[in-house]
Length: 495
Ligand SMILES: *[C@@H]1O[C@H](CO)[C@@H](O)[C@H](O)[C@H]1NC(C)=O
Ligand SMILES: *[C@@H]1O[C@H](CO)[C@@H](O)[C@H](O)[C@H]1NC(C)=O
Image 1 (cartoon, rainbow, N blue to C red):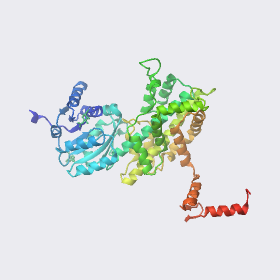
Image 2 (image 1 turned 60 degrees about the vertical axis):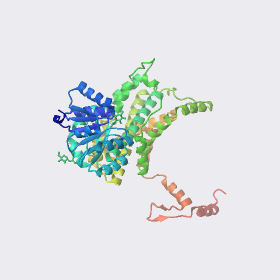
Image 3 (image 1 turned 90 degrees about the vertical axis):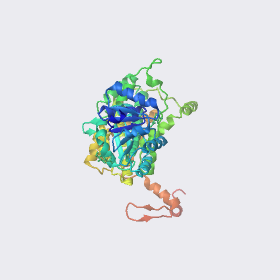
């Protein structure tokens, strides 16, 4: 009986919700799939769902051996388990039954260097390996995620048909592409998450300003975000934000959003992004600001007592004192523009980080193509990504999104609104670290001359680090202190 069952096209191990959903998605697209989990109930649960949600070609297996042997060769086995040690354990238990030419595809949020280590480890057995970023949460996994596979190109070729059907579909194709060698797929997913941190922070700042400077109600905010989602800001995050403002509290009066503790969780990809930016000497201040804000948000008790101490010290409570005579309509329009301009700077940082890593590792990342596969399925999906794709198509060597002619024009058009919002927030004592970081990034990047000359002079004075000059080549050192004393005694301006 068993022997007559046709082999599956692909396997998936690790049946938490993400794994179950991805397996059902693959099966629904018509690819016979074997599923496995150490915990028997997870396998049964998945089979049960496959029966309930349709007549899907999905078979459950209860041992690593049965599971692996149920897949046609060369085998493609997707694993979706917690990053780190569980991945190594899963690889160890499955690879025992796998053969040369088979492939393991890790779909977790893995640190890229772990993927590179595993590529070498399984290579000894002739097994191929892909580290594949999967974005879109549980919904995305079930109905169409954005997929970022990196590693063995041969292995990618052998499952391209599956990945292209399973991924989210946008007008210019499925949201999947071969990212590059090594751990590039994980790295790109990591930066995607860093950008996601930035987007969420910027949206929360827009909310803060509209609510606490403009005095807008949740009902008004819901309307505004719905409106914004019809224009240049159209995106998944703006859309879900408008939904959030519409949910009443089931356990009491008022809206649920106001009852949520202001302490943000995180899982580590944002931190890795900022660490990598520092490693590569790439400025990513908006993403860093969003990470810092999560850290500060975690200090809820400290913040509460700081509020007390500073109130006693005489600080007036600004929050709630909506600026009198504020032109609401204008504020809303300004905040929309500030959000958009801030976002461009944040994406410029993320893209430049990707390029720096690509150069270091020789990954040959195609930034326009990355923007394209983020247009659907993933958390940062947005209409605006099509513009980023086009910017890199126009010029693959674009130094920064900020200087793409189209984005440059948009930033200049939004400049005054952006500055008004940040200025208003600062004077009202409402922190907007993401918007401020983006604006400072823009202002620093666009200025042909910065005060870095003074820093160079200081470094040369105390450490003889030398400096270059604007008017002649070479490196120079000056006896600053001696000359300063001499000219001070000579001129005697302050004597
Ligand atoms: C199976 O399920 C358990 C519990 O849900 C989980 O911890 C484990 O990593 C899963 N994966 C595999 C491959 O067994
Ligand atoms: C990929 O698929 C082709 C055709 O099915 C097969 O000949 C080849 O060996 C496969 N390669 C790997 C590495 O899976």
